[in-house]
Image (cartoon, rainbow, N blue to C red; front, side):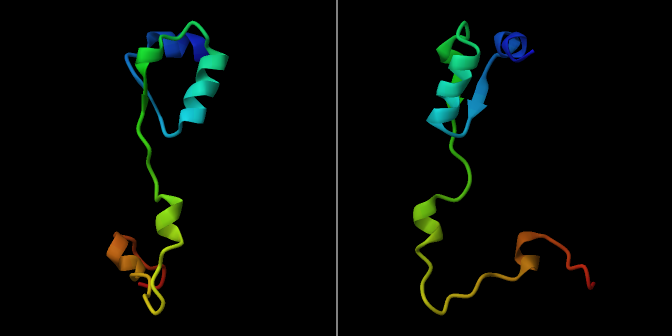
Length: 69
């Protein structure tokens, strides 16, 4: 199923180079040009770089509703 889907796809987006390598091992006939690396998420260097005293924004700032409301 993976090979058939990968072959039919115009492009495959992966978040890491390791995932692209793994995909090529699982579907070796896949054209490398179809694979596009687009990282997403918060880089680890930013997660550990919070200034002391800086509070996280309230959940409402992210568009979530509180269960209490």
